[in-house]
Length: 306
Image (cartoon, rainbow, N blue to C red; front, top):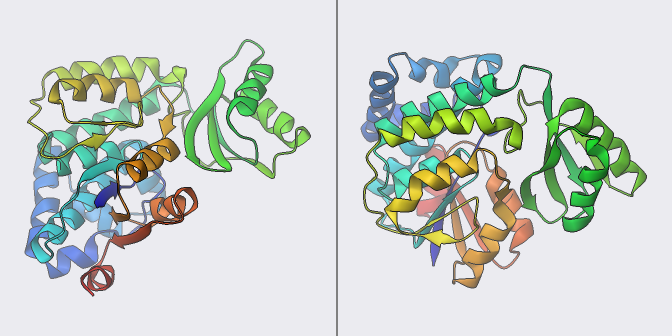
């Protein structure tokens, strides 16, 4: 049983999608559709934009989504693979919903452009941060964050894989948590180069603004279940899509539990679709019995076909 998985922020790089768009008309058409939907040239941003421009959250989110869906369309045209489930890490859940037929691509790319803007504007730059904590798990990390908060916000934001959890909140509280983590035996604890405290309660205003945008979008029946970041459970009820996407903005990403759930349901191969192979590396640590493959360019497509 196969699952298609889609990357989130942090996977972007200059040139992503260029190889596929140069070799497959169907990929080039996805980039053209994104340009039209957004009203600016995101193709040039993906193919030749600077790392700094691509790191801006309002650019990162539509750029990764567009590159991912371009790769998906090539995969669908050139292979007979079809997923039993789709899932995505944070932003990647929008790509997963496009793959499952729930969201029209043009709606999705416009929405994530706004999502990125709202998330960046929710907290002034410098006020919020995220940090990776390696070697402290579950309840111990929750208690550590409570001890570090001192009236501010800091809490787990991404449960990525065994031994790797990301926390988010006020910068000063995150810095206190890093110090405490090192004192309590963490293997590593370091600030991440991100511009906002994603998946924390500090994103509440972004969630409220996103909800208004989502109300205007049509959700189509899902052709396969999507595994929700929030619940780490598959769902196929289109009436749940909008509320889960709103909740996702402030709730932690339960990636490790999502993979374990798919393992329990019989998934043995994961195909990562879009830039990079971050998710494949995480999945390898979560489910060592599984196979990971990816598609982001012509070479990786060839390996997938072979």
